[in-house]
Structures are given as structure tokens and as C-alpha cells.
Length: 436
Image (tube, rainbow, N blue to C red; front, side, top):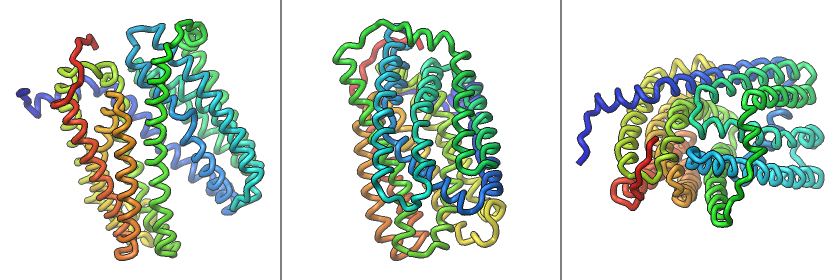
């Protein structure tokens, strides 16, 4: 039995993570605010048709990002953090993931370009803009790899600083480029990421040199384990993103009412946006979970604290937002979206459950390399979401869609949390001493 004082333990956890949390939380808040400002600018600079075309381009590009490098960024994060006490091995994983990831993304760009040229797009006029934009995949992969290294080494302050730099340059490039139309935005984004990468590479000169000079060759067994982990993580992440897109699509197809689609879309904005709050905590704690993933005593002590801390944080956020839901909807969207309040409140209940139990559990399982269970959880919850949406939307409209989402997220939370609990407190996590 582990003696546990909630007040004392929460203070201890907060003391350990508060500085890093404040850094990454501030960076995420800045990112959200800047994103809103950028959206306000480009919707006013571009015509309605141009903005619709740009949204279509970015959505199609987002589908490609789901399979970028087949999840090797996840593998680099996991195996890099695991081996951060062995720099040669750590940077050999980064070098392998960077090289193979760029090769894969290059093939994805070629395949995507061919598909765009031969297929009939819903908006044919965007074809050439899209072909010009998708090579961004390579630059973004390099950027994310360098950011991953900072996360693996638990350099959260520097990670947050680089995020702020990239956010600023991207906002400037997008807003200034918008005055030149869609092609201006594309050029602006390229210039922004080039400048961000130059700054980042200068800032991380030693790390980029270590990647280049790494001579440690990965064993075949290590490569196989890396690919299995990365592929499973990629499938799980891609399915979760696809199901979010399908959720809104089912409301549109089953109700055939654009007004209801718009109302439901507004109801989903804040629950999805505030997910950055628990995500900020996870960014801070995940490298330590990975570094201690074979230390059962460490996991039992700390993971229990994380659940209580995350639960209190998420419930507080959810209760405040639910209480002020009508005011929030009015400020963000106006009186015409008043019908979004009820599904909005329902989805915030789902946020409190999912962000505590599913999100944290999935990341703990990620850190313990149990990515298969995350994939199974995504498949089960995804199937439940589609099934429940089909029947609930027909009967209860957008409120039914909200309930379907909450129920499917609750199912996923039960599966992920139960498996995590059994694995850490009842399972076979190897207990070896770690100094982290």
C-alpha cells in the first residue's frame, strides 16, 4: 500500500513541473491567440472564394501530414528519450529517423502530386497551388525532428522559445502573404519556415552536428522495434484525426442542413481548442515517463500523482467553461449560434473524461511502448463513434452527435485507463533502478 496525501502530493508534483508547464503553456496560449488573429486577418484580406480555396488546400495537405514519415517522429521521441543517457545511441536514432522520414515524405509528395494531377478535385482551380504547397512536408518534418530532440532531452524552456519563434514567423508570413492572394500565402509560409529553420539550426548547432557525425549503427532488432512502434503510433494517431473529420461529416450527411453543421462545428471548437491545456502537461512529463519506463516503483509513485493532478485541472477547466458556456458562445460566434450551447456543454464533459483518462493513459502506454493497445482503443472507440453517431444523430440531431462523442470517448478512456492500471500496478513492468 502506498501512503498518499492528496494535498501534499499535488504540491510536490506542481513544484516539479510548474516551471516547464508555465513555459509550454504560455507558448501554446500564444500559438492559439496568434492563430485566431491570423485567421481574422486572412478572412478579411482574402475574398470568400479565396478563403474557401485556401481552406480546401490546407485540409487536403493535412491528410498527407497524417502519414508523414509513417510515424517515425513518434519513434524518434520514444527511443531518443529512452537513450538520452547514451548520446551516441540517442543521436543514431535521430539520424536514422531523419533520413528515412525524409525519404518517405519525398515519396508521399510524389504520390500526392500524381494523385492531384490525375484525380478530379472538388475545386479544380486549387490544383497548382496544392502541388506547390505539399513539398512543405519535408521542411516541417525537419522542424519537428529538431523540436523532438529538445523534448526528448527535457529542454522544455528552449522548446517553448523555439515554438514562439516559429509561431511569430509563420504568422507574419501568412498575414503579409495574404495580400498577394493564395500564392502569396504559400510563398509567405515557405519564407517563414526557411527563416525558422535557419534560426533553429543555429540555435541547435551542436545537436545538428551530433546527428551528422553519428556513427553508431542501429542493430536490425532495434530497427524492427523502431518501425513497429512508429507504425502502430502512426495508425492510432491517424485514425483519431480521421474520426474527428468523419464526426462533422456525418452530421452534414445525415441531417443535410448546413445551419446545423455550422452550429455543431461551433460547439466543437472550444472543447478541441482547450485540449492544449492537458497536452501542455503531457509535453512536460512524458520524457520522464519514457526515461523510467522500466522502473515500476517510479511509475507507481508518479503516474498516480499525474492522474490526480490532471483530473483536478481538467475538471476545473470543464466546470468553468460549462458554467459560462452561453457567454462564451455569444462572444465567439454571436446569438445566431445559441443552439450550440447544449452540445457544447456535453462535449466539455467528454473533454474532462477523455483528457484525464484517455489522453494521459494513451501517453503513458506510448511511453511504455504499448502502442498496440492504443491502436486497439482507437479502432474500438472509432467503431463505437460511427455506430452511435448513425443512430443518435438521426434521432436527436446535433445533441445526439455530442452524446455519441462523449460515450465513445468514455469507452476509450475505460479501455486505456484499465490497461494502464493493470500494467503498472498489477503487471509485469520490469523494475530496474534509474537515476532520472
